[in-house]
Image 1 (cartoon, rainbow, N blue to C red):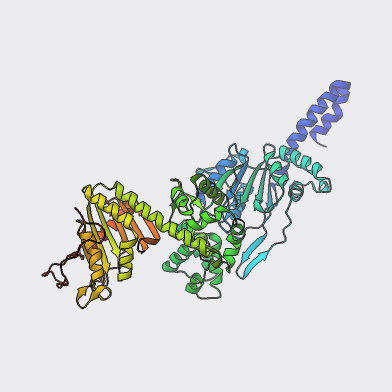
Image 2: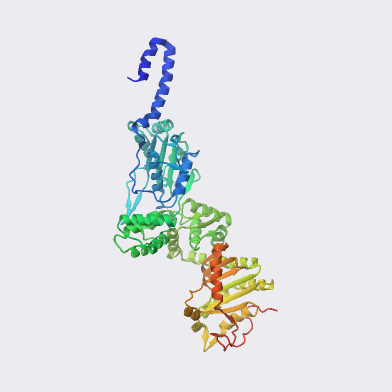
Length: 574
């Protein structure tokens, strides 16, 4: 017999009547409340966490700490968002197990006991699983709020109440969640199509908290976004998974795997699994991210299909043209959307975890995402849209070049690839607005050096420069632009790498680009010293091997049969 039961028998005789009844009621309340709070200490923490498929979580220390800070702070709805396969479920499960085992370390210290939970409830709404040989459809048992209520009640040992109406179950679940300190983890929230669920989550009673994983960013929760793993952690994950399969990866293979996957854990693990059937390099090379690949279907197909008829799809395709990142202004220009509309499309793409944003408000996508979107851009159904976006992309870069010329204070140095006459003529004909701005810069006192990288056997006629080539060079030189030629054959003899198309403004801003005649297929602009200086040094090395035009008759390795240049074909200085 418990101490409380002895008191219960003795009080009526000692006090009698009303006073005994009141004291008994008060004692019963505190006894039952304390008993409820100690239930899990006596029986262990209640939970239904699934088995972990990994031995140790690799990386995600920063995101882990953000989640712990949220769970021990004021927020009660916390979400982990990111594209499929990025590791949301794994991180959420690890959080659950660390709380279950009371091993949480926060900011270098073990978490205080008050922050641990009486029960940890796992709800999985995952529809698919990616295996080595394809996508496995799971028997999805969680589709509605009612399914989640049943899991809550069963985990909290209230099995007999699952037969009640949904209204009754909601009230009972709220009462249990109010009485106990519970961590509710819902995995793949976006697949549950039930508006009642969000209402239920918004009204979660204290002290219960919910940790959600979702592909879609939501404004109603405290969000922790997952991008690809950093290179170091990607290497560790790849090595760990490879060793489990008796596969050895060298540094070059690790680098290739990281570059192809962008640090997406699922893509790394899946590719290594394929290495059991094919050679390592073949498995990495064959990692395709198009409409026919399992990775693409698992990570992207469904979400991209959902926006194909929306303007955000155009913005997504436009962003795929950039080698690195793009600003709102650039994407607005290329899509020809007003800035407000472009902002809305970017918000939707962020919400769908298809793109990421830097601290400087620039946007980028993971390599896997970019490869999939580029395949979309180049599909026959997008031929007209592709043509428009690429034209606008090239036009935007010409716009950026003109901006840089207008802001230049001292010098412009450029290398232009002109490996055949056609590309040189197109270059001269198609960027007259940029050239005109160059001439204005000369008038302001700006010094311009322009180096043309040429192939002798493509631009020479019987020992002389082709007359059309001469006209283009003369159109520059006659306006006091220092014109130089860099011969491909000479660089080959010296074993110097193929130069890029590049422009340096004031030895500070560097533009590196690929394309022909001003219509560029790719470009990057470097504005900080750390990223710009290597390109500036490369230019200086190449300039040492360039020849000033018109050629000096006595200079070595130069062609001495060049006539005086004809008049300018573009603009002649007065």
